[in-house]
View 1 (tube, rainbow, N blue to C red):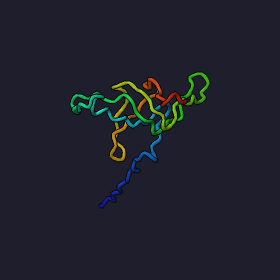
View 2: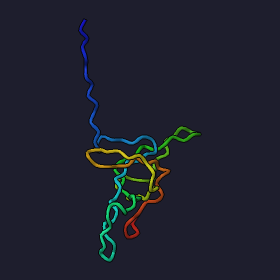
View 3: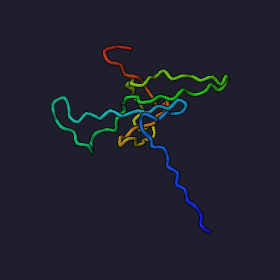
View 4: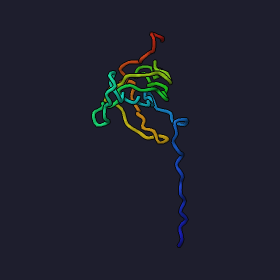
Length: 116
């Protein structure tokens, strides 16, 4: 008896169709500085893991334990954030290394020239 096999193609993941759940964010880590202010080049083996990045996608927020209402995040797509150095889950989308972080792992937002 012959059995038919079907292959199910999984949807391809890209930044345009990736939506974090609850209070999670998708962040592109910023590249660390490759040279010092005086012009000395820093080799890759010595550079620290990045702790700043740009937010690419934001989840809808977690639900309140008491009311069940959504608690939206104060962080918007395009914001520059500072996060725990070894926090998050590393993933690869569209050939780019990205991080999925919980809102609790975001330490601060960074604004340029005092803008909000």
